[in-house]
Length: 320
Length: 258
Image 1 (cartoon, rainbow over the protein chains, first blue to last red):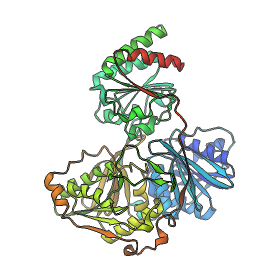
Image 2: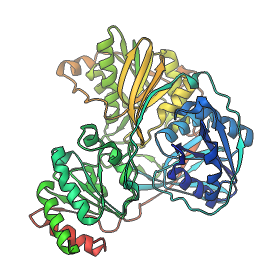
Image 3: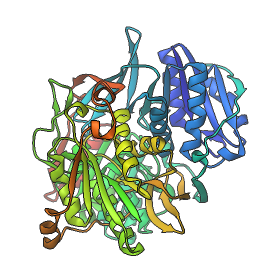
Image 4: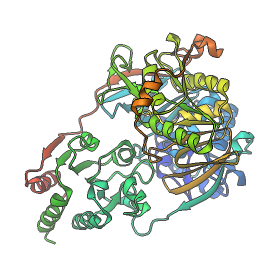
């Protein structure tokens, strides 16, 4: 079995989600190649060997600088055609999803998304796909090769197993229409201090807090628990809290041991960023909030009353 | 400007079910317009209102009853609706669905094609990229602010890393984020008027497609089996009667998280 893994990068790092997919591909077995697409990205390539790539194919071209999907479809399609990869695996992200679907149409190939795992059975690939708000788990397959798959962020952890990867340059041939969309502006807020992605405990605040001044409730509880503070898109959009704390489909994907959601309704945009947390506790005044469907402990009540009391109790307990 | 909005009918129930015989989604109950699509419709209407003369055309693929879901978007103000409906198209996956939608869009040749962020039933958020590829048009996804100016479209969006502004020449394909607007409610006049708006249906043959290019035959993915999800452990929801903070602490202690 030959597998190509799309290695998404940001700045001078290959994303952890992509390395997780690469490790899974190595575990499934066969020949595993990675592909890195961008401008000035060649120095990142060999590090992917550690996570299971025997070869990393590098398309390094100034026209590939912006993280736009369509030129990446050109690069991947040419590789799959020339080298005959049977599987193409990607981490699900805004870029990864757009690349995968464009590639599916280009190659007339099957794409399964939101996978949390994949295995081989009788030489065929079988994917595990939680569906319908995780109320059912589908075993999904492909009727032909190449098989395309997107893996849920946070579902797969990188496992260091290999050594150096061989790096091979490939010359991209780009379609005219692929280059017509252009990135005119990009604003990336680089986070300072420890990232919420590494925190064991996260206390997150949403619109239900009522106003930016009430974020102190969340901050106090996080401090008492020795955790980090996160926020939803709604409150970041409203300017209550900085972007680098945003958890969700846009923003960070986290999987702490404990996630406490305060005044968060838990719509899909937020859920995909935190559903891999070990234990989820949520407090919301709306009994119909979707977050209760995937909380281990849900509390219907007023965050303004419960959170300060909880902070006091935690402090007392931890002797703070 | 002519704007096409791709919409979908989804089962109108919070607890969607799989049909355990066919391994497909149970579509037997009432249908509704995918809520994320109403934001694409809203954005199309705002663009038309701002840009002057134009047309908003809805394009969908689904069972004949999907026409009812499209009527809600007509009531919001869309001008007409096209439904691709064909028994041979049932069970179409991404490659098959994008093929049929792209064929219908080719016939309409709109300046702009809009999609909603997410399909509430299949949990897919990728169809636009496949359609853009088939149309060989530029594509911008996750757009939270959209402007059209001088033959080009500009989208501002949030990603995992911050904010992007992307521009593309028309004709183009744009998928909007659910942060882009608050969709309007249809007025009574809109609801009455929707019944008189043109709703056309197209078969696969009308689009020049063979039956084998759609449905299960035209698809490249399959659902092999369904399982119950692993239990999340004990999951419960309590109402605060003044003692919720104590209960949370007790729960955290039990889980050895304190």
